[in-house]
Image (cartoon, rainbow, N blue to C red; front, side, top):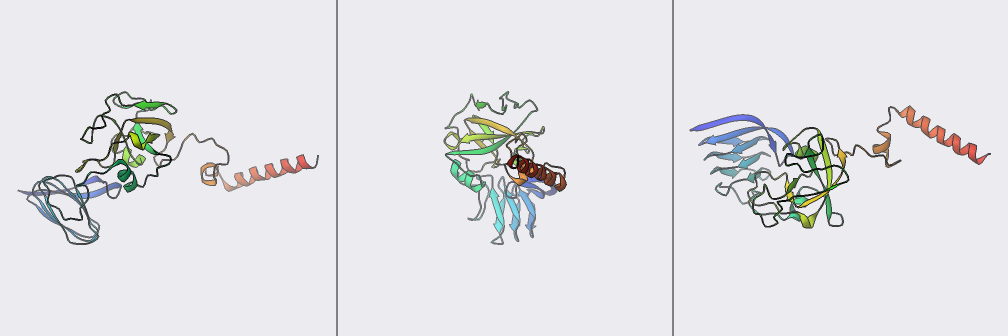
Length: 246
């Protein structure tokens, strides 16, 4: 039985929600332009243009364009050789693919929590404290469980839970597991634990930044107007002049 429907779904390739056509059963879909398709069952999808296709179940996806992207999420799916997702990624490979910078063997990743900084498992992400998974198993083969999961951005963390509280965390790369092949949730990674640094907004910008003159964007963007900033500079110049001429 052929069946299709259209829904708003998260696209891990785009990193945002997109209108996706869902192909089930024995349906046949031709994807063109910048369209998005999730292929399940024994559906057949022809991926053309710059389309994005997720291959699940026993679906069959054919690449009809060098610019189409195919993410395979099932070992039973038939996909072309340029598909991604069918191989294991090390923590370093996953971080690089997500554009996360490694500094001194550590990275900053994000966690979405309840308003009291805790998760559904009761782990606290209170800024300034450390946290560790009691069930951590570095040899665990699946992507979910046996660790704490982090995301490269708040936008991705919000797709798993969203109560309006987001925490930037410092995590050691050596404490991270890789991403298994055919991962259903490639936007998160499993780790032993880390340190909760500070609270951020939905764009990963720090909320409690009180360091003076950090940069124009961080400090002066909070001021109400350009005139207020100029007034502040004028007051400083006046104070310095008065001090020098006393």
